[in-house]
Length: 367
Image (cartoon, rainbow, N blue to C red; front, top):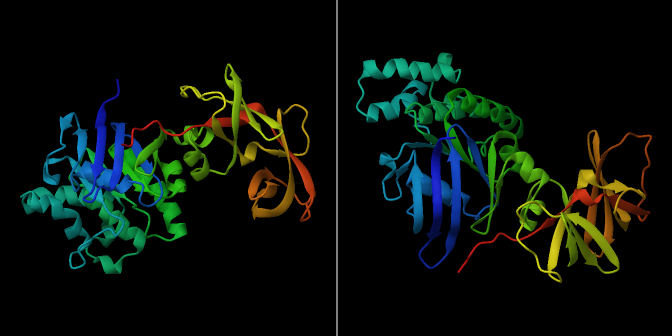
């Protein structure tokens, strides 16, 4: 049975004035797991991170770290360390002095600190820069110093608040690989807050998607990408096409949704709550599972008007308007020899029943 490093049970956060920042947050994070909390600004993810670290009080619920209830304990009594987006390095201290700081505060002697500090500096490949100051380092090097300083105290959990947010695109891509590599080698549990789905899906073992103070979905990157459970997740993650209609009936794992004169076949995800016949519902279809033209072996079909094409290297996304203001994206690999559409061309768009997935709102008590 996996060891649980972090457990949050029915955690709420209400700020003065009645603003509810976190509503009924429940999650377990295993030892050595890389967990990402993903969502737009103001969704509550940073508040959760701060409550885990003891920087924000819990209004209701309990937080356990390493099996110990830390809900009411100050940050110094929790086995956590935090790495901020700004890195928060001491500008007047060298790399070595920044990394050793927490050990110095613990009262360790210079002789006790030195071996651990040099080992940590070596692990982030900064040995030759140990005597430099932060303003003499690149953004990526500064991030490594911040990481080494956070990890030298050997916390049970490292909390990362938008750790790549201040880096440019190319450096961010390189640091995503390095950060994941460090986490794997050290075997420490990481909890990262980010608004970037690229960062979350590429680095994390599990992802918590949040919106409007509630958890929308928890799962692996693949599960969230391929099987979104709510309208928000389908709209926020990946390139999904959203449709709405009325649930007419369902049989086994297939649901039938009516929209005007059209009847669509969608799949019902496992564990979905019962949806009443006649209820308005949404379903999504990934852009890479949609095909142009009529395909007799595919259960679903709509007709649309070509609008434009988004070119992204070997991938192209054709965009069609199938209703006023309702656009469908068709993502495919295509060469210059394939059909090129002109503005206003009419085309059928098809997809199989199993490519569509019925969505629902999270079952959370808000009042």
